[in-house]
Length: 389
Image (cartoon, rainbow, N blue to C red; front, top):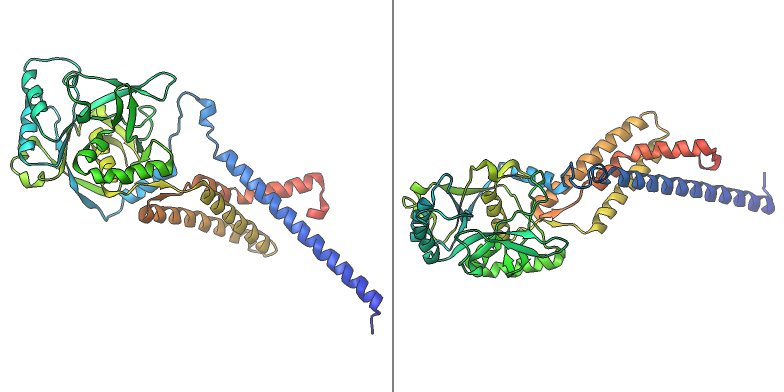
């Protein structure tokens, strides 16, 4: 049977109209589910604790903490060849003075003393004389932030008042409260005595000043005064005072950090441990500068692109599997695979490229994909939008 040209054109027009309607339906459903998933994920990743407790966040967790923990848990550990730690736990001022003399005899490239005193004591003349005569010595200084200001006020302690500013390093840890995680350090502080370096920065300035150029570049690129510490799978040689002169070769041309390693009052929460000494945190910050392995947050557009691509793949897979008997099972497995894939990729990128990919947004999009699909179908049914069902 021959179809007249007029009927043929009419039939083709109807088919074309049906195809356009189908494409429009798919597009509207797709965009609706995508926007709904993004909206739900943003709601789920919002810091609700800021509403419950504005002055003190209850939860302090970043994606970088997970990366740091995984990286530090690897069997492949390395010994830092630039830094040696010397325990000063339970030492008197006289004993610290003698320890500084012993360490100086071993020809280190720099010495960092992370011990502060706020009051005078008998026999201080000896340690004051040692502090003045010890070469390449960086002494600690504390700062506190001025009210309603971005500046800092130095908190001078006894034994430091007559010491040159050039021989000081700020030992403050970049935390908001004792319950927050120490994941960053501030390389410099603008104080009432001028720009003072962080303890680790001051030691690098003395032992390896060429490394400061890269540090300054990282600060400019991140447009931030707080730099992430790389808590890599790293170990440090640790000596006790009685062992210093027995192993002088271990300290020669090294940066030696002297301080308390086992003082509970100086323990802090870090991504790798809940009881990390302040001296060890300074050591990791120092290693980050010396090794130039700065963990750098990925640009925000990468997070958005990754999240949208994951959501698109999820919605497309859902649309393709909806008519199959095992479609729901396939989507659950596919959802789990996507979740594991994102975590694996993020971890590998951090370990080998030192780049931080924020996990909360893409993981929330994947986790809420099926919920967004169900909510969208519920909206269509509620308003009886037949052309979209």
